[in-house]
Length: 461
Image 1 (cartoon, rainbow, N blue to C red):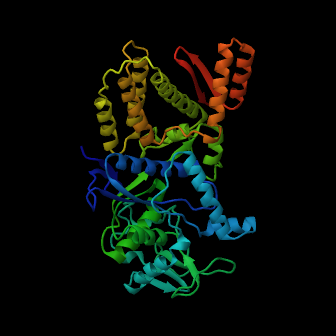
Image 2 (image 1 turned 135 degrees about the horizontal axis):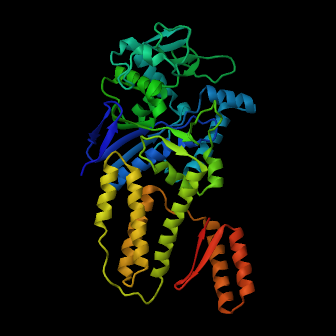
């Protein structure tokens, strides 16, 4: 079977064919680090983390780059608001990004380049565009002359006039054409700046990604990803500047995830309904939040609400309960060895779903079908050690693939185990008052216990 993915550039599903056999070069646009990232950002980050995990699951080597925009108008404004430096703001929120990303199971990229650490390459890239006649210097700014790139608009599939309407376009007083965009901005008082052949200044928004891709992945990559809102102008402009200078396609496949609605309303700053992942992770199991983000096919819109999250919390509890029952039964010394269980049908169904444009909606359905079968097996009279291990190994593999593996807090796990053992001893001694006291203490820690014929199991909220 071959992986097929939807290519925003062609508007159709295509078979994945990589530049280098067995290797996927992938770049995804990362955050502008002036604040905690919100659930809309999280969908893009989780989407491409999921895609990366699956490509590796299917045997590919994945070279994955995700950038940090660490100098930008937003960072400058934040630094002024906090009466600190742009560098201090960037350093703080890069650290916060890694905390929140880890919380919802996002693995670090192979490289996380920063704009400020790529300045030499950015300036060289712009200079190349000036030297080849695709960019011009005006008033200390450097601008890309869009009409000179004849395929401008091929990603967004609109005319230049249509592209201008209602879109984020960087302003300059020196444009030759309305669609020209800024590559280098002349320095303004009080802003960070770098020396360049055109004077002191800093990069425009789009050029950073072209330079970072070229530096870390080469002239031509396999997959370029990001949110649907980046199609224009960001990715359109990346294509124009990269292909003008390098003379070959920037990426074979462009992939874009869909929007998130909040309580059936589009998430936007004007509505004030964006929610930081940091806050959500305090209210819900972070794995339930990740499950929500992969519960729909990545290109489809998805609606966030408390009701939906309660369903996701319950779903994660079903997975955990099934897994922990398997682990508990495996501790029994009286199990017959038996035979391994053939789970190839489940595996084939999952691969078929994910090979079809990474359809995690169907794939997570397969996961829950597996959980249902495990629960039926646990209630049967045919349980064997190798049978339980078959299910456990498959769950371990899939939970890692989905990024839903349990993230135990090692600092208090030993304490929980000690209390559970102490409670068990109290029950055996028929000291039920002590047993209830320990149960109450565990509940305060967010831990629930259940006494079964096979022993006591525990789980967190």
